[in-house]
Length: 129
Image: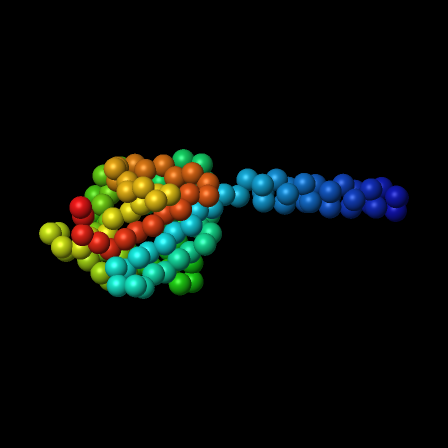
């Protein structure tokens, strides 16, 4: 009887170990940074993502962090537009929040841009040129 219990315990722990290794291997994340245009920035080194997530999903995931940065949106889904980050609103003809992925300015919106593991997302408060 005790051999069966020992065997079951061993199988259970091996199962847990395999599950944790598989989960760790499947975990993906991105870097999220905010450049305020005045020499100040904030960075999150590891925002968790899943396959198919968008920039909007990354921003929502960042809301779970204890030092989250609040943001405001208009629209829904692929047509979502972020018009304020960290209580700093877009100015229209002046500075606006523009996002970049891996150093390249995005050409589609936050609700449509599909992110990949290890991408670097940067929001810059700047004049659009």
